[in-house]
Length: 413
Image (tube, rainbow, N blue to C red; front, side, top):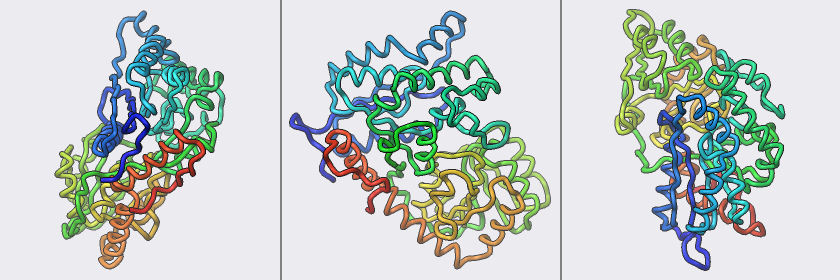
């Protein structure tokens, strides 16, 4: 086991903060995986979590909106917590909406440095996705106040709710929260890092920390006669493009679809047709079964059309030695080298997806080379050991500004 960072008082003590959403998602996995990793390495970790619950009464909703911008109660509670726990560092994974950025001010007041894992684009987009009406949208990215987002009601289809989110970001930009009260931002990709810089965050306080997969699911045989999609069945994930491409493919090709979502019925309808590729809809599956499918599949189809972060689906595919066919957009295209761990197609282009899918389906030698490269990338960048080494280096950078800076790229295993 790698040596833990220690202080004069013993192992490093970390307060890990996470505001859970109503529906579980990939951000939950990142938080839980990081906490478990630090605990395994002997660090003292104090998790602090709340769950988003939107009140119904108008007066309660008004108070909720105010707290989203600045929660006085959490400011007081967090200062008291810091005095009690006396951590060396606070690692925030999500403060929206219950904690609010007031906890960053509490940390600064108590002299505790803050690291913020950035898992979405909310600092540059009220909806947090840069995606609106079926297309990429960056109209709010470089604005002091996200007026376009308010106009279009991007957050939950409500101009009022969007105004609250936009006001929180703008207010904390005005009082210097993002510039002075967060010591280090940790996006999972360089693509996200560049968006944060465009949104006005200080470039010298942004370092890349990718997600990781533990335990290692192991290299697969990939002898299954199918390719695989895993994810939410929705428009931004490229499901309409995938189904349109499948309709024009040869019947010999089988696409297994794992997941659930608003376009489940569309996928099931495609599965019932008698022409095009064979589409098999498996619905939501436990992770154990997903890993089995990844170890057997010929390749993964990742047709997402919005700016993903660094999806766990791709990291899991790399761990299994599964090549990935990805849309040329965002961090997904950055993670998968075209012709290395997989190949790219023009995102949203069903014809290009169909052509690249067919070519990869029939090219055993190329898939084998990509499988080896994908597994090598996992071993170098996305294991628990590589991630722990990077966390240790990044924390040291915050705790001791005179120490050599961590590399933006994860260290080799």
